[in-house]
Image (cartoon, rainbow, N blue to C red; front, side, top):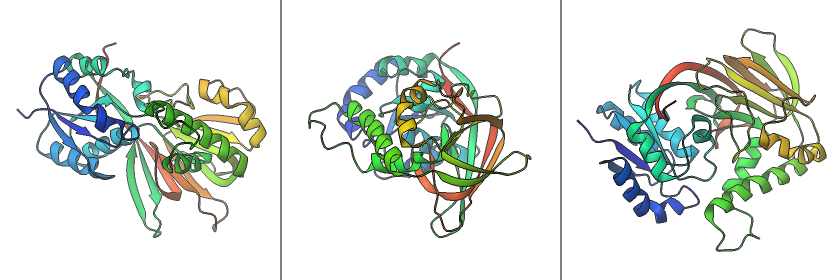
Length: 317
């Protein structure tokens, strides 16, 4: 029987995983057992490594990194239609998906779940988006896909953390602060987006949104509880739309967004759907799409739920 494979993204946590790996490996060996490590060297490589391992019959593939790493490993498994199980060893900044599924941040605790946890079947989102060349492409996502402010926030975060942070600031703090600062900067500069959205077979609606989230999980954006009622195995997306609040209202209500207390606001819409289609009202406007912290392309896009499509090693209930 093949050993479990750990796909490690050394660049996760702003490069902190590279430095922390010897300690992570020691903790994993102690609390989980034997494994084979594989290190990624560029974006997207985790998909290929996971797909090849799944084809060879590896039963458990563990993603060591943040949400982007977890998403890549899941895409690799799903691309070959494998029954391989996904494991999570957190070493990223935000840890949005692991929070929904209940994986703790401590390596020793996560390793024990990998050893003793249960297999859980969860829903997966499939997004078909428009590439820069105008062609369509599909990817899978575990957490949240969105458009509006969120894509700008992700782009700002990827440019690097705030330059006023001290050089020796902890990497986890750098990442969290980067998300918060990027949201404030984006809210002050970006206007609302006009889109046409259709949920399942309902009539399409014209909407003006600061952001629209198609959520399989509860968190995104470095800990924002955007879909507090989302469930990972209900066969539905939680579709959360934030209307044209304006910069001042967005900033004033940022704490409610992070705590998940925003659904009662009159400018916030919430619905359940298995399929969501969206396009820009202005054909000349490029509206980028974000999924699991990455920006793969733009609208028009279709989001479809795949019920109980992925096995994930999870805490015992």
